[in-house]
Image (tube, rainbow, N blue to C red; front, top):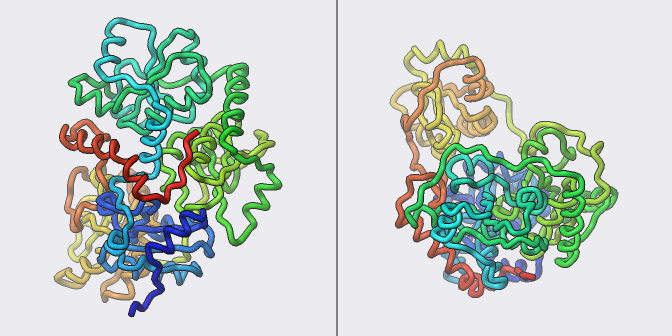
Length: 527
């Protein structure tokens, strides 16, 4: 008999089929999550639960199901969620193995709902594409062609197709007229793999542009597998558009959103939606990150439209929730909404928006559980202590960030491993906890102080404070005390992945439509 409430496969499946709100949370680290999970599971590792869950699952009445694969993490997550006020929390009966044993489909990689949806779109709409070899011939012959990269700008800068321009997905329909003013120009949309290429291409087709449009088949992966050469560190980017272009794009985007039954909400209606205690309403600003930082609605979260379609499970962790989108041009919100509606979301576009409504600047406001006050040490004081024995620094940031720069002698450890690592120390210590800021370190210190006899302090301001005062850092692998499982290395990122891994990733994507059919819970409807 379990000490915790349980919820099984069939109850969860019924909730998904009925479009009821539910958050299925995998509390393992991302690399383990990528090995297998239910379609609509969202990954919020136990090590970062305090940093993410109150923002991603904002209503305490949302039915929440947590699971792992037998590691004992789900029970800890249940206890925390209950303490923080979530009133309907259960463990997945049998964990991941129980889901599979009951007939649940297991999906691999990350952002599986979006990637599966992209494959379904291509299957239904027969989205046109060109091979890397065909695109190379066009470029080499100086044909009238423009290549548009639909990824984030930072991804584009890592590697790109020669001559390509960075135009993240939601920007395509807004800016295409000025990127390809000649109606005879061939438009090619690419990403690193398949999804954003397909969705970007089909977005332009759905928006009714007269140019011939095609996806670069299999993106930069296909380009590399064909033996072609990539460019690096490029900065070609879209430019502002005219009012005439914006108005024309807004007209076609709204018509498309209406076709997919996107709803409309005034500011007053948005307020009413947000005040319903039994429902989750997300407000996403689908403009670029720079625009969001310059000015946004006070309670909005930045989710550039292309990435929102690509990573819907990350932004909207509660399946069955309502999603409200906002922009300042009438194009990006409507285009993004048209896709979310086809993915089964109840989606609204906010109307009556004026520049005066974007009153907040800077980053979005996130929510966190309460945390006890902690003893702290300043960066300057810690620099002096580094020369003394009996001081151990644990860095709880991501390993990727740790490699880019960390305090000399700091040891990298997963937050969930820090207690066991401290207990294994050979002699009494002063323990210093740090992270990117100091937020995660404070939560870890709260747990650690109750379980070990050593003095535990937090680096005030974290690694950011260390850098601000110009103190030296080390780069590289350092000393990692935990398995390197906090991040899944995508086969389509970077430039040093084995070709076998790239091809295996493509093969997985090709099989997603069949998996969707077997799963039967997706609710996707492609127009």
